[in-house]
Picture 1 (spheres, rainbow, N blue to C red):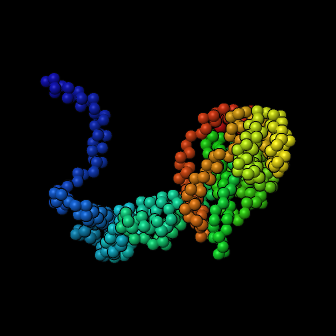
Picture 2: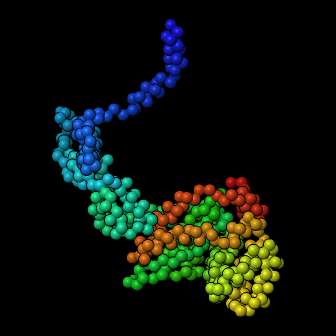
Picture 3: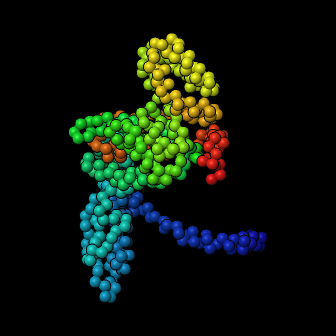
Length: 432
């Protein structure tokens, strides 16, 4: 009796859950009968026998799905009586071969008399399942050449593909690139780093060293975001002005700090569109340009002297260190270095008004230098690109893989935000 009572209480207590349990049970797929499969495979099938049966099984499952779709379209199943007044009926099949991650699958696509049937599982015109395209794009994004992709697919999946097919697959991302380049952006970016890297691209029969311009923004949440990239013949201030205008049209209303290299006219291009933006010259570029005047054996010593300038605690200390370098042994031996720093000093000195947390961010463009390094590792395997579109496809796909790893903001970002709110007032509010 005790067991019976307990059972009733349990049932009574679970009355509310009973319907959902029944619903879940109904939604479970029917059990798959493995006996025919066991008979087909035998006791100890070889790898070749398994692959052959698996290929037949895939074909049978896909064709049954297509047959079920046609049944739903016609309103009656195979062997059943056709509804009165209906003229449409089954009309044989059409052979078709599709490429999948596991090789090619020959199919017989069912047809109807009026040709009104539109398969959903294998749509008309489909020759490759999505997974196949994703695999090709994944290999392409990692810098694998078209020839190597063809070899990989043929070796691993026994799928013969042409170079044109791979190009068609990768060309499908061009619309995605255009949408990405035109997507709306945040209204304000505390820091935006502008720079360019060189890529060899064939243009009018000649391989040219073109510049790929990159804009890397730091959002108000402290997260990195590639705002866009642009391919141009040469790195020039006039083109940067067009880039700034494009960012403005995509919703960027304000930039607090713009990090740039030593391009002549670049500050004017930024301030034309964003007159309140503070321009900061990249110290890494300055040091790199400075050391280009120095022999290899002396670079380490000169680098230490320059470090005393940009790592000075105050503006007065930095100006004193620059004067000391200019009048010292290395400054007299390499006069162009001091002249270079003097020429760009107006865009270096603002960094000394910031606290250490912001200064660490502005001392260098490590974020975009790291991005460039990852892109170069992928691009260098190509030698050169046949056109701008080919370069743009690979750069976009590579960026898509790189930015997936950008998740968290800098651990010091909360402190940086407080300083930004104090320094820039209403332009950067802590309240979202």
